[in-house]
Image 1 (tube, helix red, strand yellow):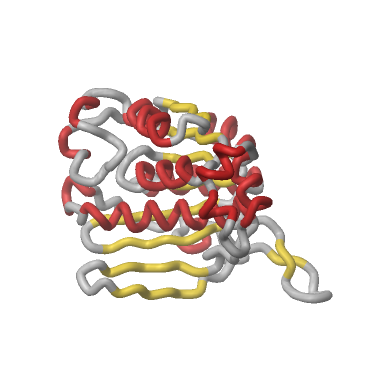
Image 2 (cartoon, rainbow, N blue to C red):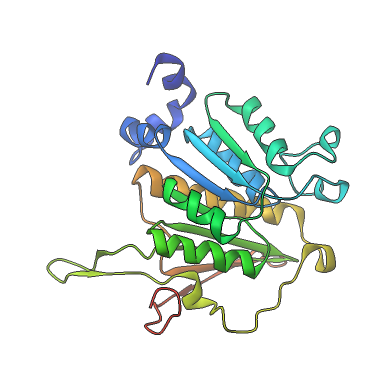
Length: 256
């Protein structure tokens, strides 16, 4: 790192458990963000401000007035612009050192097979089960950790799905964690609930998107322990968190 980088990232460099080595890992890392909306905006902004060297953002939609209540990287002057391009412009203003590639495309299987292998971590900031399952399948296929968030109404959830083998314990071999499909099987009937029908509390997506960035940064820097194997759920009406333990499903149609 040069002197300006040491100054920009000083609060990370002095952070116990991250330090210079962790910050250098962030500078060399590549994060793939699926969605440039309510979750993707804060997630990408915090990844960029933290010095993640390369970001790829995928979103097919364009900025409209109804987005501005919660999608904090977009502005009134950018109405009609592709969300991925708008987010790229905001990241450039925040940290011009970050290389952000904007893909104004839907995250289908072909795109994911191209970009997931190139990423060190994937953040699912989408808003529908079809995309979430496609992203999860690609992460399992290519052995990439997935940071998944969702928020609608007053409720939100967050977890890390990491199906890469990891140590079970001293001398006990290896195991893999659950994937998204272990918890939400694709063959089950899950109904998408959109913000444009149920609404969403504006700061709620900021809370979850910021936490997605935090989990991604820990994974990239090799700091702390991730949420893998746990699902956090937030009821913002009561501002109450619940946590449940997740288990890998041996009959899972994706990772089983």
